[in-house]
Length: 262
Image 1: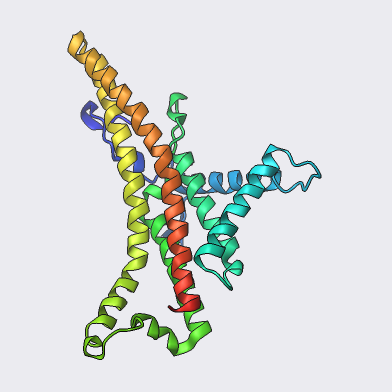
Image 2: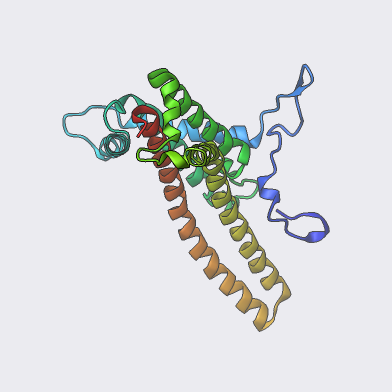
């Protein structure tokens, strides 16, 4: 984590680097297997193990099976409540979206740095990853809307009860609000995860520098910073779950608009 001149750079933890230590080019494109890709694979494997372990269908379900069934039931309830009729077919996508983000967030806050040479990488702290998820959700909303309603989908931008003398204003405002959706989805998750990791890094640097400086004041700074790390870590765990839930919830609400218009 130490940067040049012996200073700690809180942004260095977000640096995307090749896992093998060197870049690989293919037809002029960098196709290196990076730490970001590695941790996405880790998240996929953990999610697959979670589901495979919970799909035993035992007569008397164990704890793992109960957790998996609870996860499926949780997403089914979210889809039924927020999308309604015709929303069942979107449950697999909402499930994948929610648990990929949740597992990625949780893996990103694991304290692997206590093992020399290891550190976690929060893939959801990169706007490229959150933007892909957001624009994929937005594309599905558009495809569903136009496939189901055709050009009538544009009526979504004219709310019921809109006075005729406001038709010049309301539709453009509604369209702008609709087009901002993927950006807000991507930025919300990206900012929340990035801010939390920066705070942890900053307080961690205060702990190290406080102990290095010595003296009562240095020790006090280190202890207070450590207490803040514990508090921020607990808050980060809560944010990990909340951000995954908000992303999945908003996606299901947007799908509701595409399926039912108003």
